[in-house]
Length: 302
Ligand code: KMH
Ligand code: ZN
Image (cartoon, rainbow, N blue to C red; front, side, top):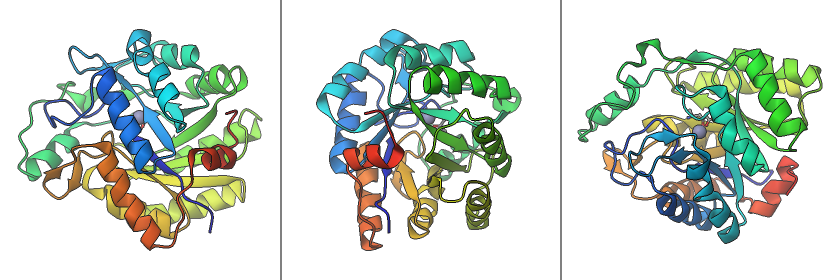
């Protein structure tokens, strides 16, 4: 079976510092967590920035540049910069740092959708962890805007102009058809790396049947020219990504997706989650890809 890529999403833009004291916020913390995750076996680091003073998600170039060059110097892991940022940012804001940093890889969210944040809070309450209100007080009206024009613009700015390859974030079956549309228009390079995203309220739920169906349709649309990875929010993380590994797919962990290492226990580092899934996938007989093997598999510019 093909080698498995472990991606690690270090901090994201959904969880708040009040939900976990271990969420990396400052540039030094993001670097420390990134290096730990890479040493533990993550070949791809998915990165967002935070305002180090407030902990809020940041699109400011200075917040990205405070850690990106140092991280690049210290690890050969693939640095994958989010173009999703947060649902409250404009597309121009979301593209500022990626355009400047010219990464090998960046994310691309394949559709507009609701992105309700209260499930995360409920999960934490369920597990008796102390949390305060999310940054976004009312996510009931929050729309994560990714129109066809937005997506085409990201493809052009980051792919055509700067040679980046994409982590195509697909939260629903329709997003696969949207991706197929861009493939047919010739705007997307192969091989495709598709991230199936489970458990965001507004996208598909964390049911195993959804993963089966996503793979069936992706096989039909993209044949041999794609690979899939899975991320799942909160407590669904490990079960769903283990299923993905069993099916020949790739996996994503990280505190962006879940703050926990097991039920009721906060992960102290991103590396803990990488170690955990690494142990599982190796037990399943999968061999973990190095960063350079990942580059080759993903067709990155290097
Ligand atoms: N937060 C995840 C559900 C992005 O950064 O572009 C998806 C994500 C989006 O990682
Ligand atoms: Zn992200």
